[in-house]
Image 1 (cartoon, rainbow, N blue to C red):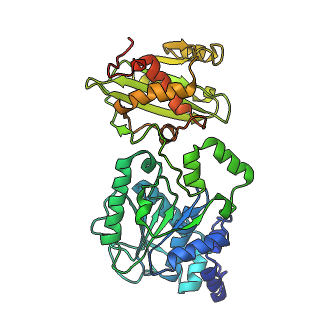
Image 2 (cartoon, rainbow, N blue to C red):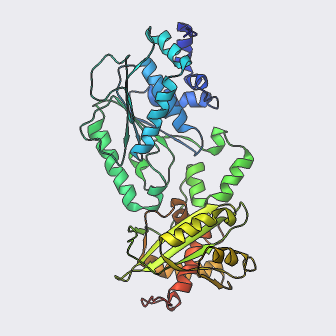
Image 3 (cartoon, helix red, strand yellow):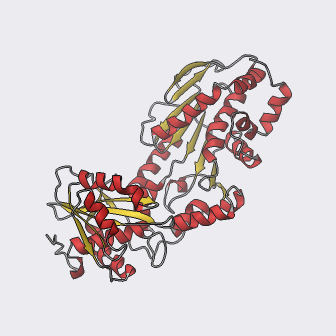
Length: 427
């Protein structure tokens, strides 16, 4: 292996760490990302960075930032904490792959005088020969908010994407995230050592309220997405979520019809459920699929799925869901495509019930789904994007395919038009 780097090169990488990314193929990183890395990794106090989705936060600060820290502070113990352990382990796996690249090995040799070698290299834990102190934690370790950190101690903790769409749709998830964050900041980081927070906000009451005031890089300040790409994000994201994820702002949800969904795992013993398919035929709309079944306790078990694109590319999944949840029938609009969709579903052995749609969409959603909402238990396997559309529903705002599908099924399968508690099956 040739020694391609000098001491002057090492000093350059200390000032411009995004160039470390360039030598391992991450050539979309810029000086902006160097600023994030230096801000997060070179401070002795806890700091936070918010940047829009798709801005290479994880690539820059978590992956290249960890390598940068090992290059200049080889004895420090690093913890990468994400929403789930598996997500954090993906970061450590990427770091391990990068550390095997000849160019990066040469850079470490220029800094340390010898090539880096893994002493431990397994899922979620890395230890390299340049770490001279003996500790159980190693060089870099992965942790998740869903995975216990008790008994661990680190010199630096990076929390990356510790708030996700699950925090947007569930108050219980928001409370759980806050509880784990308090534990990390109190007992897991060594006293006086910094915690760095990076990510995107999802809800005005999510775990970001426990963090230091963040540097903010919205979609316009970062300059990564083109005007066309930004416009496409606006078309395919609800206004509330677009404001949070791309503008880093929280719109008021005081007028929200649907709040705090309840969750319950689908009982496989449930039979005779019904489904509704709201089909899409172009890229500006979502297909939405909803399943419901009244339970013996009077509540309604439900599941929702969404898919962007043409419905014809989703037939196999629809068939899978129809069978998995023991559906007796699937409803769809008869005036949507002159019966073509119904024919395709019947070919797949589904009992199709068509109906003409004459009701105003907003009235349908604000009447039928609104009345059923307090009784619904959503299966956790429901797509986050499906619930996002429901929770962010406002009249005239798109996408609204998920609440449209759920409202249509509530209307045809339950007696929601009465507006009382006598919600019964039609069949």
